[in-house]
Image (cartoon, rainbow, N blue to C red; front, top):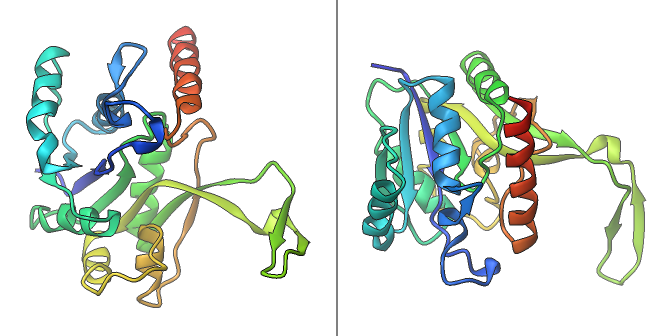
Length: 229
């Protein structure tokens, strides 16, 4: 039995994609997005307890996709909630009692690197948390309510990705609270306990597939990865 788990959250309806099928089920280079994401975590450690959080109404469709694509990587399905916070909490509630570390990851980020996943578990085991981030390339400005804007030093900011990996005991305690509006990700829930999060370097191609343009870029990344093998 492993002491590691990964909760892949894919409870959204994918409305920004504009099509009849939610983004997490669309194929990239011949394989649905979620299957690609599950595969990366499985490659890091085949013994990781993989938990896929989906809308309960999608369970049968997902099982049909797994049969169609002959997808056999072991994973468990957990019903999502009405918000990301509730979906993650449902995933945490399903963890085995021996699980010590859990990575929480957006199911529609299929290009996370194995190195980032490995480091997230190593750092979280030592520090309590490990949040993947990347530096900004563009200049940024802060908007004020009166319409004015001000330059900000981008070196003091980071773009936050997933995985966000934690010691299970701590993240379960953090999620045992009432959901608040400022909970934009798992790191903010963790911080609400007064704990400082630990940052690690993410990988730039670890995009969150949200729009049709993202799908085009995803096809490019997948083709490049195949060519680099």
